Length: 317
Image (cartoon, rainbow, N blue to C red; front, side):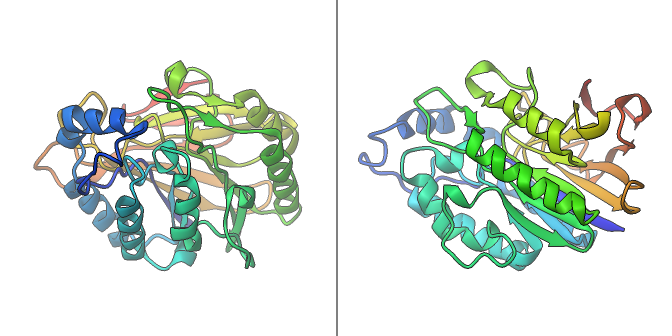
């Protein structure tokens, strides 16, 4: 059995010192939002408890689906690198960037430089940039494919983008790994399903992404961005269904409009054409309650076959 952990939307804080020059951009909007809202509901202590629980479960790999930082300040990006080093060696941790990691022009390139070790495919020796995505890592019988939907956007916008160039490369990787009989996991920040988030936060290219999965297939898609523990389904190759799994923001504390921080445990077993997949949500049910199991679902490839117990998911067929 391969045990894969999944977290997202860490939003490491607190913010470092900010200069007026730093705020001469979209960051001004984000800074005001942080001061009014996010600094009250995002706490590193929540992240610490989740990470400790992940390590206690001795998982085989950890997937981090974006938004490690808030305003993509240089100091934030450097701090996030130090935090990634505490999670484990880069070969055991895979990262894809989120919209906050590419908050302003130039930030994405800095993220690629500082976090390259966690966003590098097997055997990739060149520097990492937006053309390096999707990347591929193979761990045991699992293929981990990292897609980037991150790009700087205008103020008050948090959209993601999935274009034809990534679609073609993703399709080739999916075919390559299918030929080897691997369990294919796609990691992306923005949810590739309609209606998951507001229009100003949605992914441009949802149809393109879903057509790619329909043509080439996949076994699992992991995402963040919505700050919600969600389970959706999209059609895959051969009329199979592919589960699309979101997770509550890792840095979310109690008292906000979204559920407090959680992490997903994905237990993958079996083999070619006979895979089994179980999803376990773990988090805290109260401010003083330790991290524990909140919900469990067996994913068998068709939403009609999924057994959900207890309540704890938002499900859109």
